Image 1: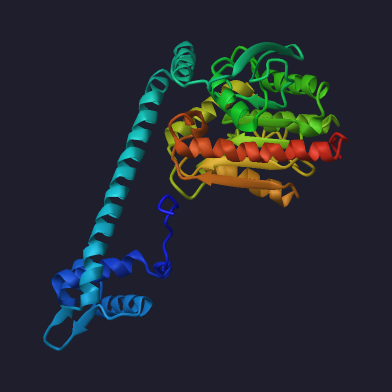
Image 2: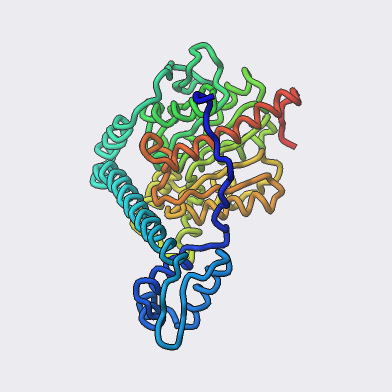
Length: 405
């Protein structure tokens, strides 16, 4: 019998859920000051408001914590017992908040340090491209992920997955403002997505501007997808993209629909940049970092090379989105692309598309890149994988490939 685990004979009651931190902080202030007027000044509250908080706490606990007379305030035995414990709880909570903020600050400082060489080289395209590849090289690729070359519809590409012979079911279009980026450089993010989704990810090395302006990049994405759709049930495929790669993914999707080609079962966009006019961000009510917006506009101009930025085939905010597959957009709450992410989801929803926007409390564009040390990034990739898994499940239930209506 002595070796059996011992349980609690009487289950102690849990703290009432209605008790709030403000109640406890109010009690501690009064208990320490033993004066409602001084405690109210300390908390920047009116005395009646403070009295209401103490009364609410006593009602929730069903005990008297203080003895009040016209001349003095005293703690009851219950009040003394609560004070000793609550001071420890509040101190631990304040310490946890400080540590969390400190870690969070260190995380964003780390991101800023990683991005600094990229920002410093933006005026020299060769240096900018080299800095972008160097940035990617600093991120880990998940263990067990194999990389193999694939020529997808004539487009040099790389496939990332754990099963060397598995046909890719996810096509990811990398970002980079249409002028930088590579399939090899995206091995950390593609590998993480492959692990999260238990699938193989294909990343096409589409042609970059200014050497290859519009429509070269979109042509390459369409060609790679078409090659994959000819070898896979299109309904079980997912088309992904991050940043401007998200815009390219949407451009390819609209081209496919216009051609009557089978569409993928799911679309996932990570911090997508879809408005090549930059009007949505510039006109947004909240201040935006105009340096970043100016840079986006500049790169879009290099890519478009005179092609209209409001052409529906390159800008989904000007397109009819009816009939598109379910769409998941993930974005940071503090990034410049958020207004256009919202606009895209709103427009898709209005067109009858199953579109959803997931926001994460970070301030970094394409925060998914930092999955190895940013918890929100890892969580976002897991959520994206859950969304992608639904496509495979639906395809198995209905083997007929999705096609444009």
